[in-house]
Image (cartoon, rainbow, N blue to C red; front, side, top):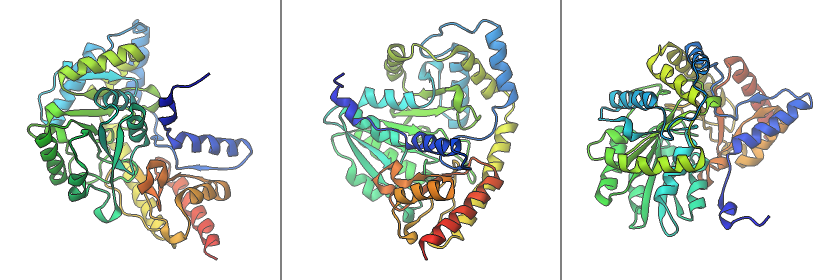
Length: 389
């Protein structure tokens, strides 16, 4: 079949490709430590699972409204109002099967050929993929180690033009674990308001923060009506396979995002949505325990990486990723990631999987046990030492 031209502009998420290669090695009898996939290794909290089972037994096996079950939209609105300090109503909320559809729909709804979209680089690869898919021009804002992987505001200002139709931000950030502090968010907001540019704020890691408080750009006066918040349940509640996310946005945009839902997915799984209500309204002890475990793992992996000659790593402030600088090894990112998988049995991602500015770095997910992290560090140290001989 002859494919449409736009399909050639569609990218992918390398984590799943590396996972497949790692699984193939395991099928051959090799032992692989998985640090490639951005997925909590914890089970979904029991009360959430029980809520889904109860929902299925109670008849939640049918279509729901495309924007989501009213009870869940109300629960999300209450959570966002409480945590962001802004008035959110159910009509501002669209529930989707995972967080990616909000990226897809928002970029599709707001960008077209001739437009420009600013996005973080290195950054989640689907941002650039979807910008390209729409025919708009991706404009990367480099996240550099010397700025602690935050925006250089002066550089950001130079990238904004009359063609800029959307700004994408992500904090806490994948893949670096960096954050955008309150002052930086205010600078971004000032420009967005001056030029009336909407912001897609990816806040999927908002609860996985190790120091200080989380800040949303939507909380800044004048920004709620210009912000699409992307959030979901995958990371916070270890619900990656449940596929449950949502967007919070101005009501007039929510109408159009809902139409995209109707045209693509019809609706999100009914029982999964009921589980989402239990997640938001139920006990949060499991979340606190997961974050505490991630903090311990973060400290272990960063200390271990900094002890490997040729490697250095800043301390991530959020999410569950380390983004070590590997320039001292003398190898580029992709060849080193391949070498570590094939020779050391450590699955990680090349920094270039997250954009051109990721060259010279690797991304390691520490959503694994301390025991496995230590094993991976030992293997990496031995393998990199061989390179330096």
